[in-house]
Length: 457
Image (cartoon, rainbow, N blue to C red; front, side, top):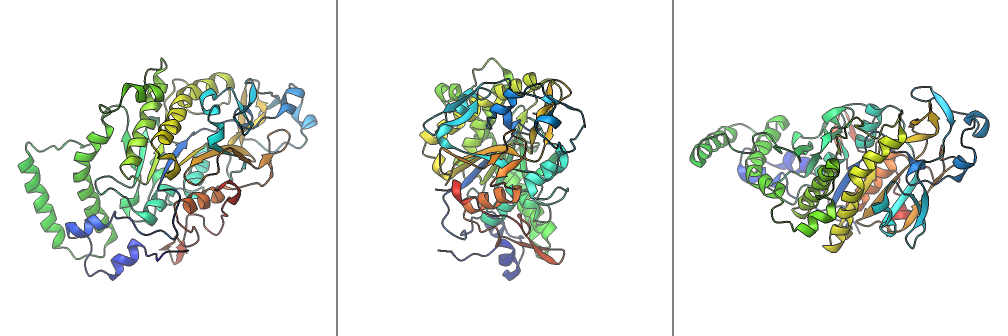
């Protein structure tokens, strides 16, 4: 059964004033009734920028070992153009695969702790991307278009549903050091009102500029705010840039109280911190552990969409394993494996996993043959991702690549399908969530997208 639905844009068009008043500014982030009752309330998006190799993680292909060292043009057949056109030999995975959990999913030893949670995951092995280059592929993953300037999926989700906490933004990006290729436009609001842009919080050092008031006293700050409010009320509403600026300024003032509290982990037990990996010897594990724990704290406080960037691993800043696959993937996996497993376990123990959708993915995969000798090139024709929690059927595998892990052949998917499914789990019909821009109604999934029904409860 669908519920009545109207957008904040409709609401503003019917209102006699813009956001000149604090009361209306407060409504700007208020939740809106979804299209139908959703299983998920929040999303935690774990973005593995650089391109994790599917044949070394979640897509077991024995044929690679059988034909290791052979010419891929003879063993595999036609080889598509690659990013760097340095096609080496067929390359087996350096990591051992085993069947994990009761579901028997094949997962490599690259992710030993995540592998223990196989029965919580829905593994998709047939995702495709339209772009073999990082920047365009990152934009495509985030916004459904391989060009700069479109709203991110986090912006769309918040535009559709609002935030459940008036003191925190609906869309937060936790930065552990590595902003994805394409920069902050991956988290853009695009043509949506500016209040839906992803808010970047650094997990190391000062989380946010000016999070502490610059005024010498609370009284001085109140006087400034009162003056700004008076000036805002004197301005006619209806101008998006002004309304968004007013709403954002008011939110920023409230965030000065909320952000220090949510970023402080003093109230977390040592057992919880250990679960996430705060005591790990590898400092990048500690960084990502902090990201994951803060993500849980944010969704507990009603933040709608939280994205995590990857740590700045020295010498290997992304999963972009062109030269030394073993070192690259080993160091990056060591940084994220325990924190991700800790996050899922913690969410489940607190009763939050059922209402929190966790998504793990890169922007594309990697080739089953070597680039040169020890690396793998980009591969947009087939790669793996997984989802857990919030309405996802646990312990299932969907789709498949060919015998080489090269191209999706069984139930191939595109990023629009992922977006449609994510919105569906949040209670949003992806075909109905639109915004009028440049003369037409635009949506996250453009004119594409189908819900991946087989992985849903």
